[in-house]
Length: 316
Image (cartoon, rainbow, N blue to C red; front, side):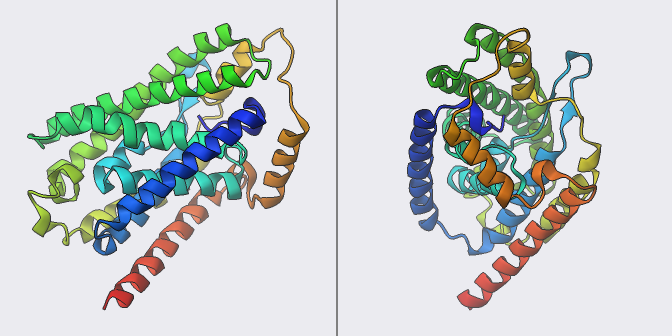
């Protein structure tokens, strides 16, 4: 669901940038009110895990499209909704600038549709009430599955509305007809992955879950094994990302199906300039290269390790 530059009009893209910037400002203010020093290693590792997981598209076989984890609900459940939102916003920004994954002109709406919808809207409406009094692995799986599935579908609906407002020449009736079923399927995949990960955390490291933060606050400092597991998992996912499905993702597939036999999308000069700027900034467009995923994931983990270490030294 990484929206390219040419799908949204400049006016709609500017509005998305303003909305995303406002939300990021609020999130930073909220995050500053909570102690983050002990949580920084987990923030870095979970950011790397989601970054790596997003490169590994899973195929829907004969349907012709693929999907990948977005991770908004997973990050909110592990880090809190505001820190989770900021972490995923950072991942999406890194993807756009260094790997040309998602447009830089449409980055604002990508942050809203993928990070804000899941972390700041659907998570408090569904996940928090479902886990308020019960934190079992089964309850976490169910809450993670339902919340993630709804978040993907709502994000897809938001993107479809933004595309409709942009008037870029996409036949909207057909686009709606392909976007909704494809993202319901992707949402089920997202829900299964999120639910399974949260169930594992609930069974092994329950103190790391945000819904348990008050009840087991004293245990939150002992999470080295969890960080090691997620770090190794991130490296594994980055390493096998070269085996990702070659099918287009749900958005690309929906655009292709909607335009069959019709006129191509209208592309304005400013959108071409945005594409050219992105191409000049990207170190590995579309993650080209067999080891790009592994190296990028390792780089994120290294930066997270150095950053959390320096933060601890400064605190001392």
